[in-house]
Length: 245
Image (cartoon, rainbow, N blue to C red; front, side):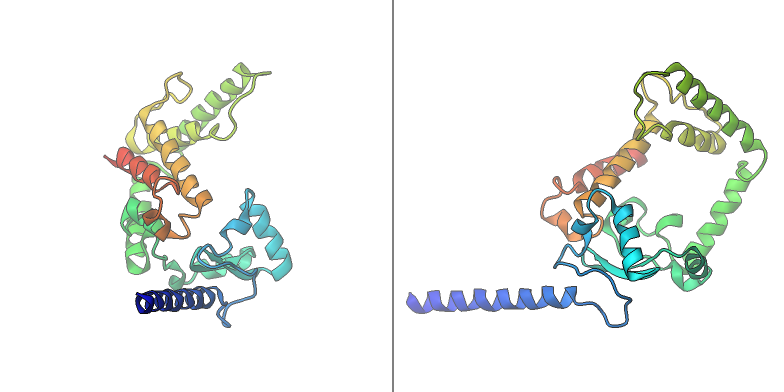
């Protein structure tokens, strides 16, 4: 019995040491990468972003320069804050690579203009632009739709003078309506008391996607196997399924 306990303790100790070594190795910065903030095992720099990720990234850019590196979960990430460098990067076909991400892959399975890469991205981008032109995008015909939704938004402001209005989703209605009307020819009454199904679906997608980002799931996909409900995976799956099917 004593021997069995000793062997068990030894096995646990070895596993713990190996896990510690793995975590420390994963948090060690690749010498080829630019400087950046220190990270913690598994979560990387996600917790450091806090409630104002954009503001935190700006502070890091001031400290480390226009190019710095960090870890989003277990994924190495390079941040570029110089517009000229961003333009130069996007002019190179090699920058179209997309990291494997369970959250975005569930929506498009690696296809579409968001997740596709390499020659697949090039062909789908050309196809998308061609079809958008066919339905009126980039043409003067879409201007009428935009002006109508702008007028509706202005009327909405006038009707709510002196009253509190929800600012977070305020512009979802006119933007989604203009795009949907351009593509399908159907209009959405986004100011109605009962929100249209299309608008509800889009808002649900955005909310659930934001939850995966704030919980860290977007950057550490393995968390969906630990507590899918807590980290927002369940909400994301339901939102995608309801929107697509």
